[in-house]
Amino acid sequence: MKLFGWKAGREGSRPALSRAGAYFNEAGRWPQGYEAQVRAGYCGNAIAQRAVKLVAESVGGAPLDGSPELVALVTARVAGERLAGVVAAQLLLHGNAFVQVLRDADGGVAELYPLRPERVSVELDAGGWPAGYAYRVGGRATRLTDEEVIHIRGFNPVDDHYGLGCLGAASGAIAIHNAATAWNKALLDNAARPSGALVYDPGDGSAMSAEQFRRLKEEMEAGFAGAGNAGRPMLLEGGLKWQALSLSPADMDFVGLKAAAAREIAMAFGVPPMLLGLPGDATYANYKEANRALWRLSVLPMADAVLGALVAGLARWFPDGRVEIDLDRVPALVEDRERLWRMVSAADFITDEEKRQMVGWSQ
Image 1 (cartoon, rainbow, N blue to C red):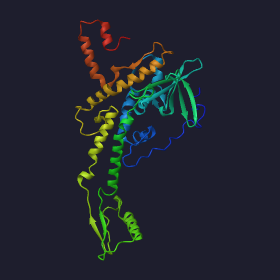
Image 2 (image 1 turned 180 degrees about the horizontal axis):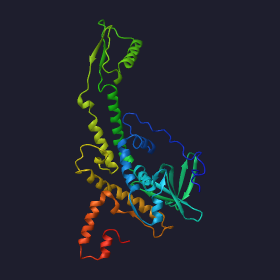
Image 3 (image 1 turned 120 degrees about the vertical axis):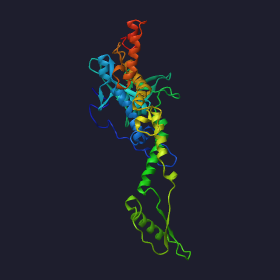
């Protein structure tokens, strides 16, 4: 079985991500492009990474019920992670997930492998309908038919063929959060304040030469700047005097700005801020309520989309296949399910078959 040279050989199969466009320190600039946004968000921001992991790992680790063959395919591990969790993370970040169907010698499904979405492009026929896919690695492109790839995409109001992820919408808040973190780090490096200004006033109106200014600046930075030199005494001579400066508390307080940006990031990925350790969230009474909201509002809809698309894509091999989350085995939903069971059991005006349908046991 060959997967674009991945199993037959390593050469050229996974080139390193280009760092072009990954740096965006210009004032007012936000990261543009998927790779730059992933580096700034998932790789460089703890809030965004944890939000994605909370949803993706919950989807990947959810207890499943259904056809044993399909359950085995969906719960198989790819690079140490469960397939459903990888697909959920790709949908959150990119908005698209492309799962390749690998077949065995008899034509059956041997494995499902998630392709990196930024390397896949949809190929259209003359009528504008998807006819296949191209997987590009470096300068090499491999064509795949629509029967070999299961394309799962999020809703995109401005594109007919590609989905829209959450990372782009959160990139502004991520940039603000990262900038506030860098600012606070710079304040700590400088003892949380600009200590003062060194004023040259010889009394005769003369000015320092460029060489004198450069040398004095270098000596100041080497001997007195930074947290390591905090409180170090300074010896002044030759018309130099020290003018103390300070920042107002409002100038130094970036905690509120970081918290607001972090809440926007959590909102973009559908995670209650309380579960990310963010302060000031009184929406939920406790972590149990927040965890229940996470499952109801984010995990279950994402799992339904992923599992439903995989089952539909494999219908030609498993026409009667079924995979769904076993809600009775989800710890966060135990109280909800217990309440439902009590209500159904107490309803003596419905049949046993109707009761089974209400609790999801009709199949």
